[in-house]
Image (cartoon, rainbow, N blue to C red; front, side, top):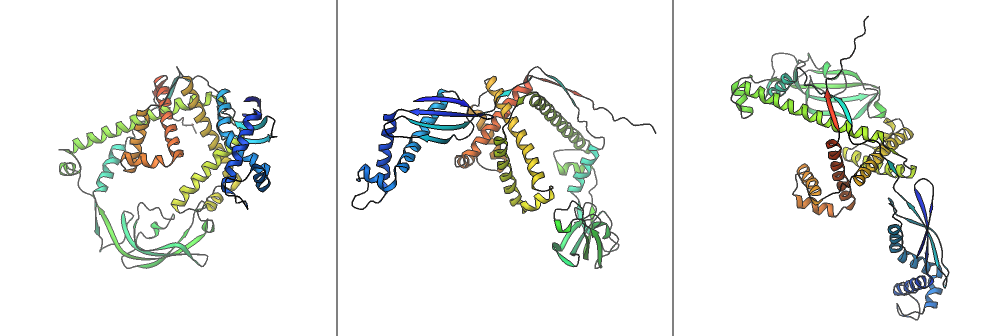
Length: 441
């Protein structure tokens, strides 16, 4: 076998593979034998028809294609290995010259991994802003805890306030038509924390049990339903119940009820520790992100358009699947994002970033001889099992049926090892955030 390489556009390589005449002829004859096993030829049992009869029945070209298809997987793999090509897509046969008695010439197009030029990725000295704990964070945590253990009591002697829960029936209309999905029965609406249309909950405040009335609102311009964007609407409302949220008293008894605490001070100390732990986690993540961003920005790689468009297709398929689970129509999303062209540009940008990140990580791993070990994969499998509440052997069974998913998890595990390497080999100082300047009037 002889292989000639010629560099093509971007990161493609054209291989011309020459296979000796005898080897090609042997492959041709084996193809005749295989084809004769499944074609029906009058007067002959399957597999017993002479070569000339098979050629006349199915055509010489069909046999040549069968022969080439049987030869190419092993031949191309050997050519790639011998020439040390880092191929990232399935090679494709672009043409062939197959004349029996002569050497077989096959031209193959392969796409190779783009070359990455790394910038500085070790010994960096960087800075990130601290993520200080807000002054009111402790009180908000206590308020949330009290709210979680609150009770709801019926209100019978006053109108609804903005701190109450109203149990309502509602039915909406816009431009004289009933709004699809715009109705509910015995719906509990938190008047102080509503995610309904702006102005909806506010107009229920001040109303009483058994009141029936109408409210007028306007849908936001960014509303997901194209027909309702910016449109006025009327909702018929009936109040069945008003409930008041009653918070428990913050005392030692409450502290003992919600955890292993003896006093309120113990509870507050635990909240402080939790907030500090969250701060440390946020700062750690900020440090990792700053290192990674700096390393990526300093690296150079020319990503071919074909590679980006394949990633775009993958992203689009992933988004469509996730939207389908959420009951959101893809075409509706496209319109809300400014049309197909605008969304395509966004996807292309995301795709280019993902590809560059992956290429840089792989380059660092290769340069620093960072390799995956069995324990790295087992750690990822354990993480997946914990996330989905499954046994680890069940996770492995499912991954065994999905090679693409297994490949993705292997890549994630490698990403983690490279990130750990970068963190260990660079320094990040956590500094106090700069205060915004106040302009003098």
